[in-house]
Image (cartoon, rainbow, N blue to C red):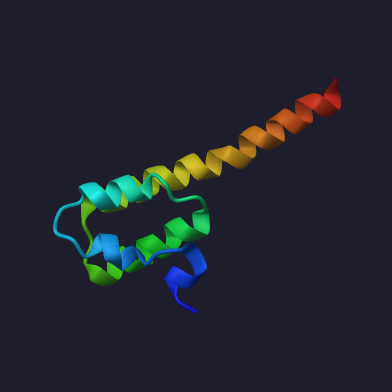
Length: 80
């Protein structure tokens, strides 16, 4: 299995570019924390760039906030 098989594309395709704009735009579309972690590993293997790691950390934080928001909604509904 490859990352492309697992997630539909290969992070290196975006991360190997010198400019970060396309990679950052693609990072905003990552849908799972597992996918973000794969991108982090790929970025570290290619060479670490601060803007890319920052974008990945921000995306991870956004994704981690989603389950908490959903579980809070369920708790409110259960209390009603």
